[in-house]
Image (spheres, rainbow, N blue to C red):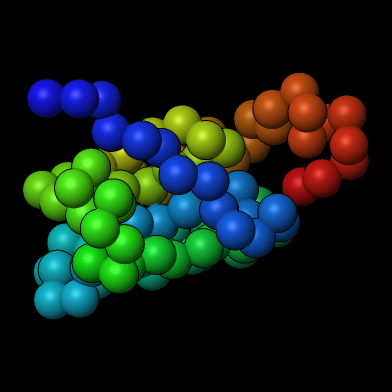
Length: 101
């Protein structure tokens, strides 16, 4: 199996990309946690339904929800608020350089 492509958010202000699909109970449980931690960190969350993009569906079909922070897969299936908070505290060098959140 090929390594899945890690997509980037369309919104340049979003550090978190949340891959989901309709009817996913794990997705419904995790999204409020992700949004709360992103709000705490002062960043946006971009939510993307994998079933609207054939490539995303092929890459991530059995892994949702997928939480991608700064271009790196942070978690699949479930999210731990403390671990996500810690990940959002770290800012990549290019965000520090450009002054972005």
